[in-house]
Amino acid sequence: MAPLLSLLLLLSFSLSISGNKFTVGDEKGWNPGVNYTTWVNKHKPFYLGDWLVFYYQSGMADVVQVDETSYEKCDASNPIRNYSKGRSYAFELNETKHYYFICSYGYCYQGMKVAINVQKLPPPSPPPSHPSAAPFSLLYSSSFSAAVAGLFSAVAAAGILLLR
Ligand SMILES: *[C@@H]1O[C@H](CO)[C@@H](O)[C@H](O)[C@H]1NC(C)=O
Ligand SMILES: *[C@@H]1O[C@H](CO)[C@@H](O)[C@H](O)[C@H]1NC(C)=O
Ligand SMILES: *[C@@H]1O[C@H](CO)[C@@H](O)[C@H](O)[C@H]1NC(C)=O
Image (tube, rainbow, N blue to C red; front, top):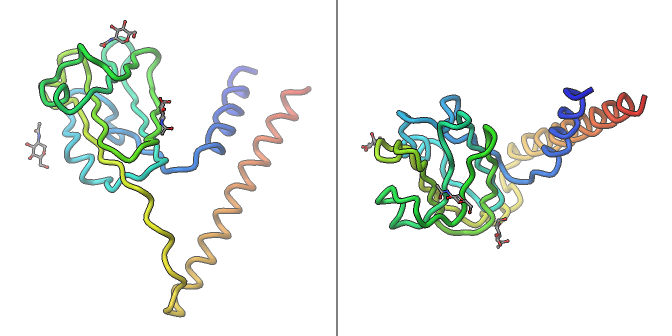
């Protein structure tokens, strides 16, 4: 029953997320020896409402949000927010500003830190003037609704199973 419940929670969680979700460090996660400047350059721009998900080894790393000065100095003594429980941490980029995260376990000096510049969502693009743009956006929106509908039925199905 427990795995089913977590599946249900996971599904409802994905439904409530509006922005893009970025796994910090991609498959390498939040670990020493990853160049997060390269990671940021690969995935930017980041927009308001996007999420950062840090995956780390329990007890081996933490995620500390700091200001720019502390980021440069790898100083975790003045955290804005910190997180070290469990093995993952999802953080919503809900303000248009620079965010700075470091690890306080000493790996920051080797580059285990990440700076993210969050921008406003660009204004919706003007209606396509070129005819060939239309089929793509139609395709996109219909597959998106299909995905949402799929999630809803999966949640419903899991709910029914739970009630038994
Ligand atoms: C994280 O926050 C807790 C509670 O505010 C504090 O006790 C702890 O020292 C902080 N850890 C770091 C690395 O700042
Ligand atoms: C963004 O989220 C943080 C953490 O939940 C909260 O403290 C802050 O007030 C939020 N900012 C806005 C503009 O909603
Ligand atoms: C990360 O890679 C960038 C180039 O993408 C390089 O300039 C920088 O020195 C590297 N940082 C570390 C800590 O190796």
